[in-house]
Amino acid sequence: MKAIIFFILFILVCASIFSQNITNTLGTSGLFKIKDGSTDYMTLSQSTGQLNILKTLRLENTSNSTTGIIFKGTDRFLHNYGTYNTFLGVTSGNFTMSGYSNTAVGSSSLRVNTTGYFNSAFGFQALYSNTDGNLNSAFGVNSLYSNSTGLP
Image (cartoon, rainbow, N blue to C red):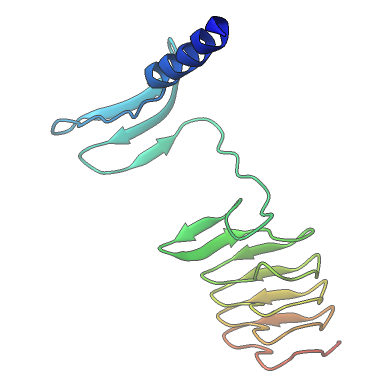
């Protein structure tokens, strides 16, 4: 029994020692760096607010509405939900489709796609209403906006 109590106390002490927040206030023109002995991996400039990633940034594949997404404000901006899909633009694409091999660049492009595949949408609201249309190419503002099930 004493061994179990000792083990529990040991875990609690270790958890409190190793659980921590890192807070750092930079002085004027300060530079925050994450590095090993000689290699800088990331820097943050206090004077410009610029964050520099000096090696590789790895973004997980988008598997749901909270993983593998870059946001602009509170809206999705860049993600690849589904299979071989690429979406760039505020609220472009969605997280419920089963369609594949789609590319959309532009705000709200291919926004309601469900099963549509091999579509290319470039421009604000291009192929916006597409649900299960396949093999469509839309270039320009509101191009093929009302297309929902059309095929070429």
